[in-house]
Length: 265
Image (tube, rainbow, N blue to C red; front, side, top):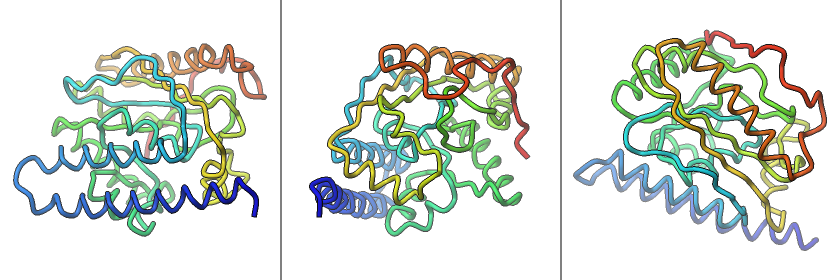
């Protein structure tokens, strides 16, 4: 067994312990008095930080996520581990793929801590997710979403789905864009390997260098304008963050001629 594999299994062991501890903590909070939602957010933040620590992620933070009110946080999506990095710095209800709910301990703990699940292949699930996002924003809770809907290795962002922007515009919730970039483009998940393989590659690496940048507040009642402004900033920030990391990932290397939006069904 190579040193990288040994490192990966050791880290996996400690991450499992941290996940079990988070699950038990979130479950216990259910019987405590007070603001249980806030308590669960704190536990989830500690849990996310444990992932960043055990994976030896070296995160360079640019800007900060505000907490003065609720926001719709929107960002690009590079890796299935993006949420752990982001949630170690912000407190919000993230939108996640539905199969995460079935992971041992991880799924139930995630559900209890306020994660919103979506099965993109199910119209019923998509409708329920839209309702959950709308209700969370209406109740004054922040939501974190990746409008592209999946990870990829394209140089810049792909099509953004518009549904969450419609809700933000209707409810008057400000949008805050963010960018997450990995120094090595090999850390992007382009779905050529399985999620399990992708996870273990990250577990086995000695360290990973990441930049997380937070943009300015964008507000308005026009969903398309919110989408365009946030996606434009994200694309420009990707270029800036990668300027001394060898430039953009292989591909077009150019901005899209037009920023497309897809209506969420």
